[in-house]
Image (cartoon, rainbow, N blue to C red; front, side):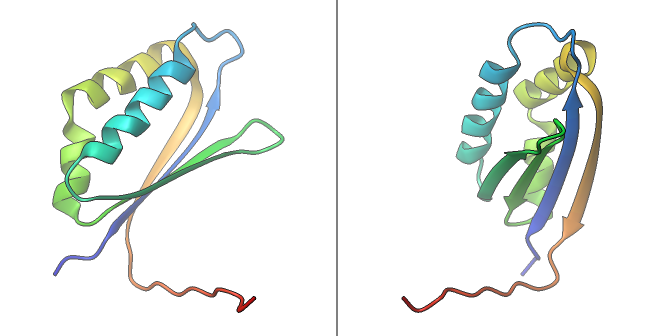
Length: 104
């Protein structure tokens, strides 16, 4: 069995970005959630404007299918042209998982 793949996408938007970012981001999240092997998606925006998305797929194969999805690829290209000042992507293999829930 393969380990889950966790992608950490950190970005900052340009001040002069073209319209359409929010709608495309929402569309990409919806599309990712329909992909076989999708596990989870969470996104956060820090006070200084940094955006962080954490996306989990059940396997490398599922992750790569999302990475290579043609509609996702087109959105990535538009991001580089119109929206992002900078971004970094870290793709990691999950080696452990722990959790805690307070017994209320």
